[in-house]
Image 1 (cartoon, rainbow, N blue to C red):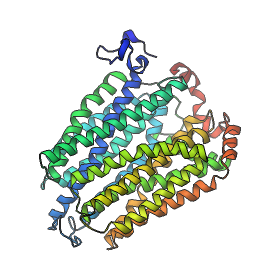
Image 2: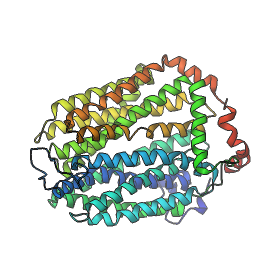
Image 3: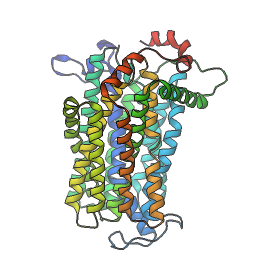
Length: 484
């Protein structure tokens, strides 16, 4: 790893002149990139969506505070309340389609850092005009944010390829990962609190709050992403040789196909776990957009109120993560994951029944905290199960499939909600349908069966990478040794 004398002059130190992350500049770069991306994502989720919905309603002549349903159509096509979910559908499909290609870029080329630099510049460049959000520019801003969203997912994919390479010491990698989680969470909470506080102090409306949120996000993101990708994170040689007759586009999908076949035939516990991840993550990610749509369109929430909802979800994830560890030790991680999913089902159904109209902020905040507990509980269990059920020696191949599983269905719940909304079905019914995805996830977790047996299957399969999965990596051994 990089030694202390070669660190940049500005590299931060702890007390007693100890450099952060043991003098590992790439670990610091990973942390800075993660914070920058997260603030950009959370700013759009917490504040921009509400402003876009208000401007879309005004575009078709509806009052944002009117009690009746807005029947107008944006450019004669969609209801304003379908705007954010349609945007999520497009982002979900594009992201799921790009993941295998980006995986191939990471594996078969030396352009990993170049791609991340390009995506960083693109994100920041496209966010600048979004600060000028108003009635004349809102549709352009919506289009730009759509590009920013799937560009951000592409950068996330490239960034996460660096994580297992930060150190060859497992204890140190666990220490780094814990630190990344704490720093990321703290930065998002501080960002949300700052924007909500300033917007309330200055009495900004929805549009003004969104403008402030985007401006603050840019001020934070630009230096962080520059330091991460301009100075700290380094390029990598290709880890594998591109198979003859395949393009980068086809190679990623071929690898997903072969790995999927292997999992289906040989690792039934992992097959059911990935099925659970696909449906549960689809429901969780989709419900973010749908909830913001419902709270803005039906409950008349302002940007600061939806920002507070996102903040409470984050805060709720802390006891959720602690609860995951406690319940997993009482029972096991599989049953703990099932309990977390059942909590999400109950909370979603109750929310759809109880939240009916304006003036229910306190109830919405309560459901947000419970939702945060459920998601924090669920994702903590996911990390446990991924580390346990993925056989040793197959981490690279099977973790890529895990990322694909977590993204491949994210467009389905928003699509169903949008179709129901366009047909005039109550949005409360649309929210209730998310319990279906969680229920499928619970059934998939139940199909894993006995936890101890699942662990034994993973151990028995450790190190036995099949030929069709590992074939493209045969020529990579010298490169991987050099990388290490």
